[in-house]
Length: 560
Image (cartoon, rainbow, N blue to C red; front, side, top):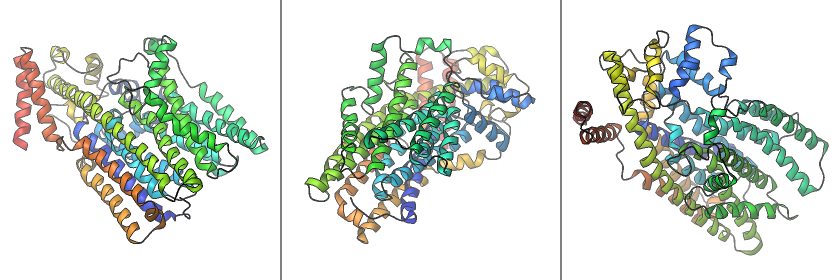
């Protein structure tokens, strides 16, 4: 694995393939299961943020006001900006923008790994990252328009750890890290963990070198100050006490599910996930280990993800989740596994140079990656069936209740269960508020009475509707780049040809396994869901509600 540095131009093509694949995968989830009406906490966002903004009395205090444990300033600013630009509140536009942030984070992570690895092996980095950002296990974040907070947490956390942990204090990269750390405080409460990890890196180097330089001491002090500053933004509201861990046993049980991901039901797998990282830490402390920067970066990623899991395990141990690990949390606990895979690769390369012929050191890491991809397939399947499908069914009911109320004004229709989740009274406040009515999503209105679309709503739907174009372009580019590199005899690909084939085929197989036996057309998916809802109401002896959804199913069938 001792290849020379790659040019940024060459690596840029691999980054493009990763970006397109991540973007297409996210669009795919949105195209099939995204709701054009608000979902859950979005009803609160409208009344708490959008209404005072429209009435001209929104304050910075309101923007940074707590939302549960978090101060989601960045999400609120983004959502307000989208309404201003679009002219109307459009959850599908929010999801589309979130998909770009998701794909950008994937690309930034790949670049950071490539840079930490001495600007080499970019092909392997992008190929191994591809399934992590194209599979739908984090689909809950993809279909909640206001869940950009999770993507901001990932992106600014990564930038903060890289800038503060790997740059000279006072340099422009270091100042970018400081700024990213502060922005991270206003993504989610656990944004405070990034400077904590950066400070841990300083201590790790001091432990290895058995001394601490003056610059490192300055960097450590700044990290401590940032952690103290970030701690002041964290809120522990009393009304979330029921969801917190009530005992050490509840906490450790939940944490073991997180650390065992993508096998959350088999908690012993947490030991396997952690094994490469523990071995890397031991090898890192040896004097003859060369890949210091890459090892430090991987250990920092793993520590950051583990701390995220610790925080969530304490705060949400009794949240009543569909799965042992909720889909929305998988976009942070996956980082631990990403670090574990690359730790295995790094260890394989280290031991291959010492004991094995070139290339053999990739066998066990690729087997390890294959096991993880298999687990990710299983988790993705469960998320689609138990979260995305179920959520879309509830959202179709919410759309119908919204449209019926806006057509009749009859509150009894709106409160007739099942109806808008979590509380139809929140939706009623929006529907009857003169300030909010002009920006309500089009899907809240009945056919024929809906206002015109926003300025960018059409573009968002075009992008989402062409999800397969983006996804297939990325995958074809991956295959083409591999073939081109092998044809030219590129050393990195030629020497590790089995790893190229195994990694790429494993990623393609994972994607194919999850999506191969499902309809890829939104109309077909919604027709089937509307029919299921109609059958449900028939079984409940609710012919009036059954007829509404049966009519919608028949209309969708005619469109095919």
